[in-house]
Picture 1: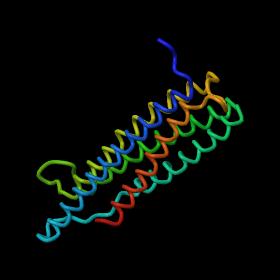
Picture 2 (picture 1 turned 90 degrees about the horizontal axis):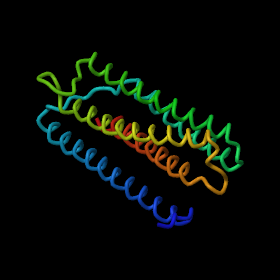
Picture 3 (picture 1 turned 90 degrees about the vertical axis):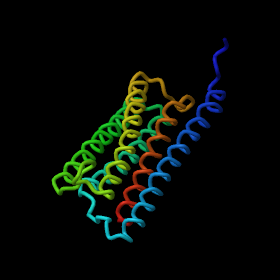
Length: 193
């Protein structure tokens, strides 16, 4: 079997990534639509509980934006064939992604401390929706972190260059998508309570 050229890989892999991201966007559109429908129905019955988002979710937003910026810097260094610095910025992105995980967890702890539970007799529909939406996003962040780990290791071995950066481009596209998705979800939950 003949190996695919770089151009053939681009023609195959990028559309698959776009298709995957589109399906993820539709899944989150479905979740946020479900949230809106539940909210409308429960507001009419005075059963919708409003609460402030945890401050940790604000910090999550800061680190996800910074992580996208570090991926932009990694891309600049890859274009210059500067492997040490591209690798460094990929791992900075990875560390910021781990911080995002930590801040989400701390945000959930804050919700629990305020009596907002995911399930159980004391849970509320609005609280459960926040947990479901943020947990579903977090699962995608974990996939993004795995992608970043692979990309960081490949960069450390000098496998990316100005001419050959497809793997990095795919990881960066996915990571930026996750960042934009979080911004949408954060603003959605912030303003539609």
